[in-house]
Image 1: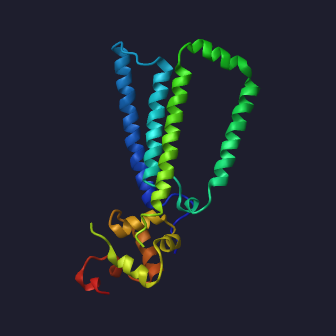
Image 2: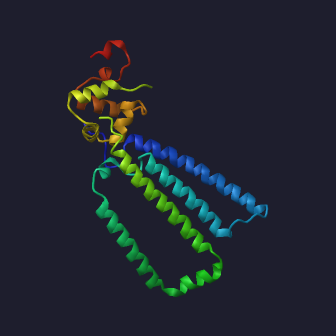
Image 3: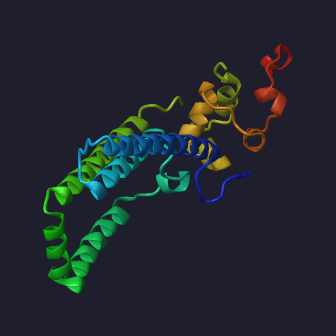
Length: 152
Length: 71
């Protein structure tokens, strides 16, 4: 008797929901604190970037905690080889980025950099890259540990 | 909540690994591991699925009573 469809199982759903709620509250209070600091005259980053950084950090924490509690992939996907699909996704992302840059041209990118006139783009890039790197490391460590924690 | 050794015993009697049992009921191996270790309380549907695969009753696997401890 199989109780599952193709999605996450009940324990995974429970953990993901719990983590999601916590991260939502964390993001809410971080944004509230940020707006308070902004009103008090403390500006640690320019306006759109501070919000983006807070959202990205919360998203990265959510991703990392979901991976560590084994609630990121459903059971059926875990048993499949995901290397090929990962490579396809990376190649597709790179092609999409190049195509978007070529389609929309250099004008929009150039004007965006000139308007921002600070390190906003670099900061956003670093935050997202560090988050993804940590997620990747956590996923690898988790995969290695999963082979040893079986209680058979 | 302590370890559920009765599931482990029933599983071993059927010569199944945690992965085999997890695949049979449609959950992740880590979920079965958490149930056996007592870290997670399964739903009644999952309990019934486990019982059907292992050929036991709910009482035999999940009821905490001396009467069913030795079965």
